[in-house]
Amino acid sequence: MFHDISTPLLIGLILSLAATGMIGGTLAGLLGVGGGIVIVPVLYNVLPFFGIEHEVLMHVAVGTSLATIIPTSISSARSHYRKGAIDTDLLKTWGPAIFVGVIIGTVIAGFVGSFVLTLVFAVLALIVAANMAFRPANLHVAESLPKSPLKEAIALFIGSFSAMMGIGGGTFSVPILTLFNYPIRNAVGTASAIGLIIALPGTIGFLLSGLDAPDLPVGNVGYVNLLGFFVIAPMTILFAPVGAKIAHTINASLLKKVFAFFLFITSMRMFYSFFS
Image (cartoon, rainbow, N blue to C red):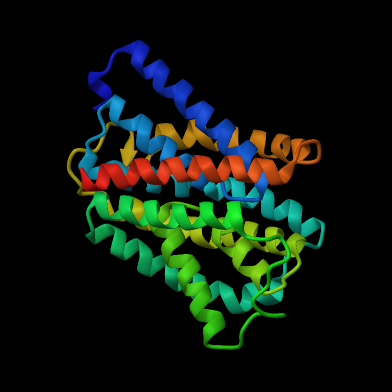
């Protein structure tokens, strides 16, 4: 537990969390993905060194990640809204289904063990990595989003699995929307608002479901680690614009392949942890 570790180790944890926020924010700006896809695996690998038990490790990583997404999504959504890049009509149809999906995912996460969440993240991270590495830029499965109820079913999937993985809306919604020939600018902008719909109820759910959980470190409220939140969140907000600026100066295709490789290694690491 945190109260058992020395001051140098605590300083090391704070620096690790700050670096996590810097990397997550930068990659969010660079690639249009939520910082959670970076924050969760980094926390998963860092927190055991500071006394977090494996029985609650993934829950704490996911809950803390969702909490950091709240201020990041608010900041990002305000910026995209001012630029007219948020599709409010899509939010009206997807929003309720995403919200219900988040509730379902959070409830499931409260009942399953940390290793189940690890497996969910490993499988879906591998799928995201394959999409980023191999999907042609101009690949579309249809010229527009499907009609109801399939449209709402897609939103339900995005909400439930994003909550279980501790990620915002961009990781799933941007590639799904672009598969249906949706403009990338509007997809990224709308995803920033979707991130808030996922993160706010998801954080509350992980906070409440972990209130009576054993083996939680000092500084946790449920499965949300306050130290992680207060260190990571400002870094993601600060460095997301940095990533957006860098995006215009480097080879985006190469960067996506490098990030896909990072996700592949992360997925394999989590598979190993699950089966061992």
